[in-house]
Amino acid sequence: MLGLLVTLSSCKKDLPNQNLPQPVKNNGPLITRYEYAPNLYTLFNYNSAGQITRITDINDIARTDYTLTYKADGKVDKIATGNGYWKFTYNGDLLTRADSYINGNPASQGYYQFIYDGQNVTESLLYSNYGGSVIKPRSKIDFQYDANGDITRSDTYLWDITSGAFTAAGYQLYESDTHTDPVYCFRDVFAVLYRVVSPHNYTKAQFFYPDGTVNQDNTYQYTYNNNGYPVSALRRNLAAGTDGFVTLRFIY
Image (cartoon, rainbow, N blue to C red; front, side):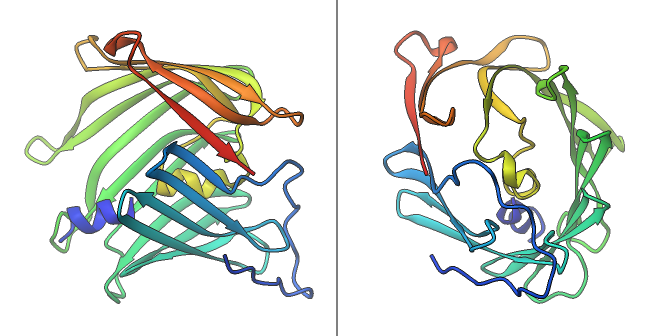
């Protein structure tokens, strides 16, 4: 998403300082590879405290590296990549804002803002300077949840510069199982780089255009390890017919 803002606006293990408060290490397995296809995958690296320190996105021959640093209390401070970085701001334990700094410019070029109901993100808003000096809204996503804290619906809106208002860009419906999503332990990072995640894995994800017609109708059939974490998932896009499928893989 930092790359997106750039476009729109223009495994080493580090030992923690033992004198500083350390985060609680994730109790489950740490995911090291999330594979969408053999040439399309994401790698994750961690330090001895279980903090994620580097993320690498591979898209065929293209590669993007993200390096994470932390505050003294164990919360994420920055995510650096290429020509810029994200700076994280928290309210207590909740990530409320992530500012984008690019090409050494001391001024923020845009930011994410997160609004909550309890522990659940109800709105994710993206702001950008549109290549100028004034930061304005660009998009927002509204979220609804079930009793398990899993997302059941998200509505996407894009900012219309002419009218100065959000316009509907589509919506998504989700169903989830009761197994832990392996990236949920670093959900703050995932929310900034990729998307807001639920504590459990999606078994169904339907995407609709604003008029209600179907864009994608995805189902997921998982295989789990002895710890209850997914090791693979057969994803079918029913809107593309029964042959429209890929196999996702999870390595720990």
